[in-house]
Length: 291
Picture 1: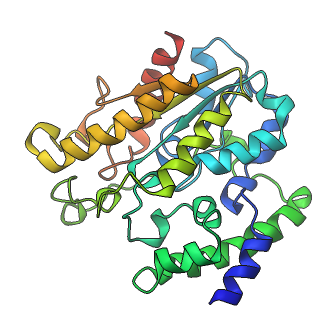
Picture 2: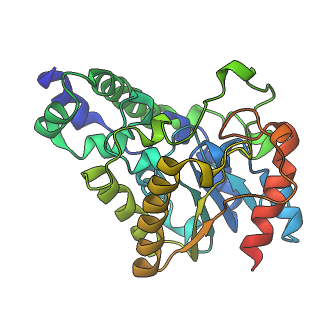
């Protein structure tokens, strides 16, 4: 395992495959770039956003991806400085990005794992979270391969300028009973290196973009923070972490607890809107950005 991790660390590229395939969208030199995790990827229609801003198609693009982390977006910004110098970057974040207690491999950001080094990776994730290291090794080689082949790879979602949609609603029995015990908040710990790495990336973005706005999106309306003390406590801590960093580093923070007109029927699961919710969420987000 140590040998595999050492090799993976050497070949690791901060831009994962899911993000790399969207980078051709930046060729339009957009004024508004939506990035971050899946609640941008599945919820923000960049074509509609451009229309609402009075801009032509291509002026807004969506390069968010599943479990997208700030460190990966920062790597793109460093690689394409001319594009981002004139852009307003809107990045969505989620609790798992900062919580070092997360168990599920998919919720452990790969770029943050890479920065731990072999010793830190093994002491942090072995033996109970070995899946995180297996995923890291796999993703490291996949990202390196993509970085060497990207010129011949067309963007997967060019027609929608980066928007993906969730067109099926999760069955009732699969909805979590509460959010306080959600995997994003499991074994809650904001004092570890993950929060330091990801917050640091958000701060670095300020130096590379015209404007940076960090979005903390809402959960489905069926869940009530006032009746879930664990969620309320943990969420307040996570919001405070991001907000304090914004004040220090100079990025704006939009903490969206709810969206007017976005109802339970517009949600596919506890986090993501379905197709019907996309225009509602996009319109509201753009209205907040205009302010």
